[in-house]
Length: 386
Image (cartoon, rainbow, N blue to C red; front, side, top):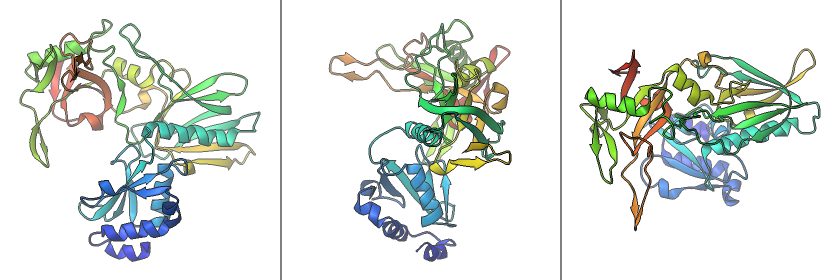
């Protein structure tokens, strides 16, 4: 069937033919309800939406089957379309391809499922190895701004998930950033933070950054931006102030719209806090990858050593290996929610200038549609582009 679909590569890929191909290939799994079509989300447009029972297979593994076995040579994976990205069948230009979105049959965070694959696959390889196994993370250069190429950990006997990481405060903004700990034979751990390849966020900051006394804080930047007429601070209700644009707009397919959020290019101090926390600098690493089972391969080296090689898009162990900007986004989160007699508590409640405005560390990709500012010698300037 996929061979027949290749004839549509020069025109528009027909949705109904893609659906028929999926139905034919996965007929047993569909009968067993391991894969089901999400027809409610397929009524409009050209997209296909599938529910996947992740007790059977992880969505990222089903993506690989779609790319490799169902639609070989006529499909590609893109990072847009959810926490695990999506698959495009057909010519990669607007209106020519059919996008396939995979959703969990239950409901779980994509990041959590990614961590689960990472932990389970490592433990599959190290179980019953009392002396442990060497693990080597190797990049495929898909993220050139993450400049480290390899990261090795010897004697791994187990991989454990990390639980609650704590809440940063003005007095102690650094918390654990690791998602998994590699347990080493003889004692000791190596902290690993895992970022999906399409992740836009480094972490929340409103619990400490708005009013911290240890550095120039969020309220300082918001107040200065208003004084320079980059943004306006407008009262909404119940004493909340929001950021609103001055003369900042963005062109969208639906027309010109206001930019309602502002982003500050983080200096090295802020960048180090939100990226590395209090644990990654202690011999750990940040790994960028949306994993599938094929990313974990046991290799026999020429010297007789066995090494578990893990394919990843990027590796960072220290600040100078992350050659990209981190931004603090000041994000409007809506008015105080009122349900009955209960008044909700806004994000950014610690702010003395703009309560209701969230502060969150984001990537440049996420920040690019906001008003951009940079601190230059203690006085901020507005940026036109990243």
